[in-house]
Amino acid sequence: MSSKSSLILTDLREAVGFLTDVTSKPPDIYMRAAAIQAFEICFELS
Image 1 (cartoon, rainbow, N blue to C red):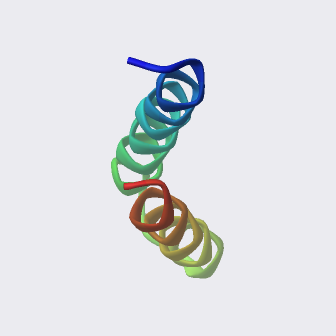
Image 2 (cartoon, helix red, strand yellow):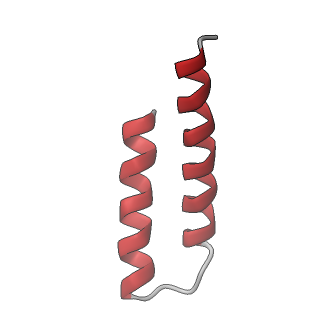
């Protein structure tokens, strides 16, 4: 695996962790916005 691939995979793992954390919080307008942004980042990295 190349260095760039390794970096992207590490970033993806962190983004998925953040998405998991955000979706486990009680829903409100800010958590919804954070979840949408986290999903977009995960989608782009994958």
